[in-house]
Amino acid sequence: MRAALAILAVAATAAAQTTDLAAKLHRAVVHVQTIDRELERALQLRQAAAPLVKLRECRIFQPYTLVVSGVAISEKEILTVALHPRADLRILVTYHDGRQVEAQLVGTDPLSNLALISVAQPHADHLALGGEAVARGDTLRMVGYEVEGREAHPVAVAGSVNRAQIPVPIRDLYGVTRCGSIVLGSSFAVATTEGQPNVGSACVDEEGRLVGLVVAGMPTRLVPDPDRAGQWTRVEVRFAVPAARLGRVVRDLRAYGRVIRSQFGIQFRAVDEALRSHFDLPASAASLTYVQPEGPAARAGLQQHDILLTMDGQEYRDAHELGEAMSEKPPETPVRFDVLRAGARVSLTAIPAEWK
Image (cartoon, rainbow, N blue to C red; front, side):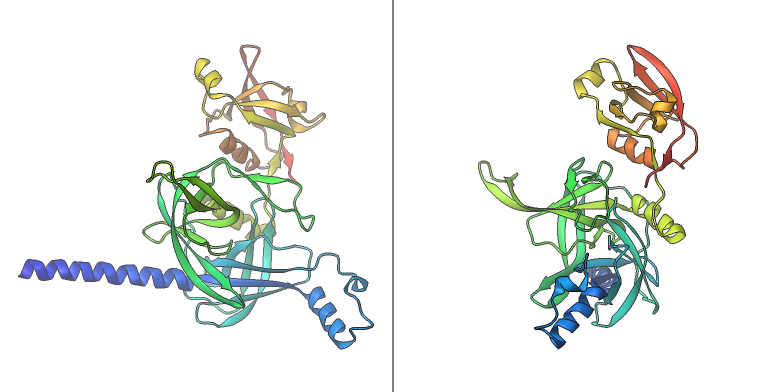
């Protein structure tokens, strides 16, 4: 009898902890609405004198309203998706209890599609950033806000990490980014058969640790059902930046209001797996497809068709991770590359410039 009571007590404690965890996650996730003040003023003018004022006459070049999720990472900081850095923004944050406060933009990073905002009033519940990694097959929970009509409410859906290295097209609506896509090489994709919260939602593991932030998604797609041969199922796919990468972006946004990255003036692609295996090349081996004339790599002597083997003597998980590691090297700091050229290994030193 005592053993049965003990088991029931443990089960009750576990259930209470799970309930407390779910409540904390919902409290830490917020609803973020961003409105361009120029658009607001133009609409007010139009309402006051509709026959006389046309929106295009108000010189609104980049008006928009954005509704996303965000996650509190400290008492006064919220991490969300990228906001327009040049617009006159009014940012409204709504907590789980309906309380609404205004926020200020600390900095935005269009390349990772992340932004950091701050609120004047402390927010008690937050999820600390960590360096946790996720692996294919891991089960995660996405917690964010879902909008139905004019109402927004927190929701959580379960998903599994099922793929990586997928180019994610990012719509360049406001001329913020110079790249056509973000290749989430060391990031991850989460697929579910349920509806999805907004971008900006938190990805947490089964223990409630923040392991990523959702920055983009793809339209619903049909895929073969793994449990039913010959059947198809609809899945939603969301792409998240992992916690370790979030930490680096947050550190730079706090310090500079932007992320400092290096660029070498090269483009490359992963070496074919069969070729890599035949010549016993590292997993991150990458073939240079373009070397910018007079760029840092060209000045160092790197050439098209060179195969990058290591950077500063280090190998990486894949070519995408190598590329992200290259961007994290401090500008104007020497970086040594070991390359394979015409069957011979060559060591060259390049000094990267700041990516702008």
